[in-house]
Length: 346
Image 1 (cartoon, one colour):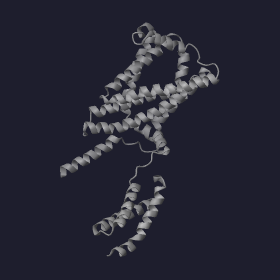
Image 2: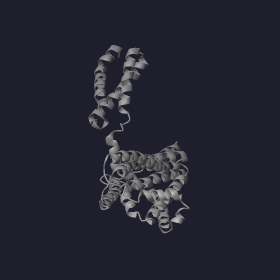
Image 3: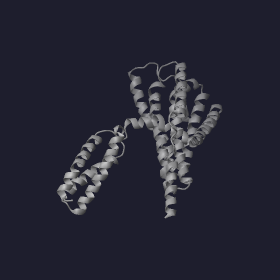
Image 4: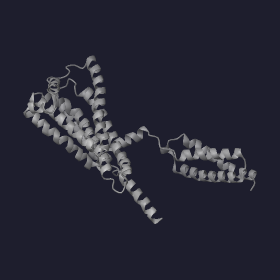
């Protein structure tokens, strides 16, 4: 076969490949049809063969460059990474995140215990004997907290309310995300940093809560905290679970190397921390605008109870309509076992 005859026979396929590429590159991956994918992959293989033939027979630099460009475009189209669209993020938050949390529930319950147990103990101690609590927290700090909840923050919703609460919302995001990030990131030190952070925050928050109860401001405090607490406290515990997961990857790598175990467990940990960050943003919005509103406390208790129920249903039942997600570590272990078996066979 000479060059001219080769071009005449193959030109139609090359043109079809170009047309198909142009159409598929301008469409999202979710809109690609099975027929188009099959057709594109078949033409891609044939163009790759044509390119190798042209190179081996030295039929001209221009023809070789043309086919090489087609192959490069086809490769980029077939193997491009799927875009991180809003739909992907929403699907993760609505299904993948609660599924993953349930799959890693043991770390969640350990984190919950590390936070709640010291919280309850320090709260009871401070409520009975505030002097004892001063050994944990500076007296000035506790008195300031008590003063903040000695009465309702606002009597009216006006320009002052909007200005101050917008500022405080930003502060809540920064402060809460900072605590959650420390719970997560310090897990890399074999989980010790995460354990210390959870214990410390549990003791501090418990002591402040107990002092406020002792001073007789419990109603003001709990009516303020009940609404955003559902998202905020749960997110901090989830961040702790993510940190403990990192630590577990360092302590117990199993069949993987410690480095590979950290990387694999880290994928799930980052996903958990991302979901917790989403919950903290919601908590900051509620704490910034709803919690301090001049509303009857009974209304806040009702709304707060509903929000706690919403968080429970979301985390326990979210994504139940689909099969609960398998964890990343399982798939990597299977891959490792397969590779290890292949090496032994060789």
